[in-house]
Length: 552
Image 1 (cartoon, rainbow, N blue to C red):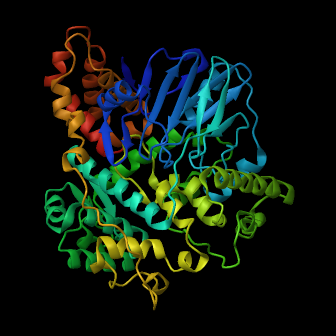
Image 2 (cartoon, rainbow, N blue to C red):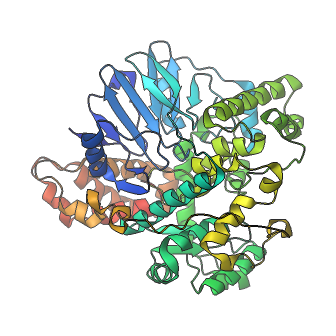
Image 3 (cartoon, helix red, strand yellow):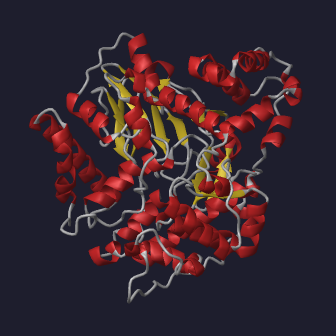
């Protein structure tokens, strides 16, 4: 049985009804992470199907007789766009690619004015819509609670199978087991982990779970070796001040492309290399998001909004009177003044509320108000910066934690019970360090929940060794002798496309562009029996660089 690796900007359509299984590169089963197609192949041979409904970063395509099942990760870190017109469907993580595909086939697409205007207002760009309906009537985003079932000429979204905990302790302990396993297996797979440290409570609770995952001695060793990077926001004075207190308490180091100490003293000391990389990534994002296809798009406004705000930890409601999803109307009303008329606003508002009700029904959020459900199904994708293969996981998006929130009352949610429990259990030394806002500190009378200790891990199993997870160099050395790696072809073609972009070419420079194009074309033109050339090429380095820049 063969499983092909999906490219990061794949497109599957009714014209390309696959005969074999496809997979994007990572999946989690229990507490384990398996890379590439090797783990997926092993899983398929053992269980007869590809993984479905797991939290992680993956897309799986499974053929069952005349039906195709396309599933993404249930944490919402890889959005799937679904184009449907009579007799034709297409699926891709790229909104822009679906628009191009529809134009190529001559399909008539219809703009929805209310959603289009909402995108401009809220900064909820094409990849992170505030509803599952995009501004193009024929293109929807698969919600986190669903997956796609396709026939040769039809595609429908169906609820994924989910399991839920019976109580708060079970749910939050499940989150800890899953998250600790993922942290360990990412590092053991020779992949880096990056944690943002701010004055807030979200980043602190994630850091505490990572501290629990490795223990103080191993965490510090991984930090010194560059396997675990800790970074903060030098532009935000309160963040960098508190971050320094946190790293001092844990005896670890801040890291990253920016010299945080120099930057704090002189904001003009932003490294040119880091700035250029940021610009290249910005071009890449615009390509992927398809912003240029949206009429009257304000790039500057959206670029600023896109990276702002950490919404993920808001299991509580900002409005104390909000007790249900429908009470979210109060939150949405503030956007009305930005719409051209009341009718457009009401159309958009009703779409948002209907989507949240569906997420509530299928995600068992029946006791949660609007804001946590909205976060779970929408905003998590925004903050996670979802790229296939990204190591910037945002654990607070995992369904187990949302399940835990559903067992708490409004008072406990408002006082950050989940965050404090995770911090108290994983790294109690972080409890007393100041927060950016006093409201986030441990309130008087806080009683931590009794959470089970994670002492039952099989380290070899957690590290994914039973599936022979390989490093990049090992994978390159074992390329099949009869045919160049499909991955190398995808990487080289994708990189060539990037270099053709005039903005990227300008940033790289004419000489650098020609050099890279020549190298990539050599890889693309390799024929049967020539795959040994890859071992002596620059491809492994290129793949590594693209992965570090979240372009793979």
